[in-house]
Image (cartoon, rainbow, N blue to C red; front, side, top):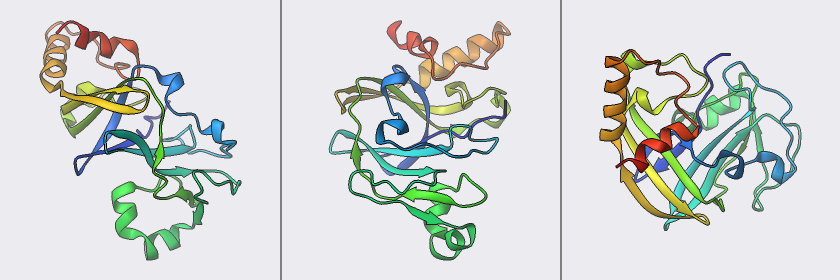
Length: 197
């Protein structure tokens, strides 16, 4: 399978990739809004891309790009269908930041600010290390220098912990022991590292 586009996460003015979800099935499901994706591309089989953030300690879905023919509102926001030409002409600075995920135009829900009621841990990462690129399905925290662990209870972010040193130790351990690095994201293995500290 082609490497998949990761969801984004804005935190303290920086954009991270969402690389780990401890309780994935309870995190975000676009079908809960009655929306069905109608297409995909090889880098995004889910047919959608989310951008999350934290607003006053609350986890929220800020923006959503989705391939759908439906025109359903989310949080009283209706989607905008944008052709690639419109995207470049009218939203080029925004899209340079958020990104376009479909070549034939995206349906955008911009500035949703929808609270996400979730309990669990999230791992976000930045500062990609090119030489550790892993041929997996999603980005691995091992591919990044900066890793932050968010502790979330009922949609409130209670703590944000810099776990970059723990991820670096695991990366070095895998290099020394020649342990495979792929498929080390979005599963419970990555979160077991933090319970050891």
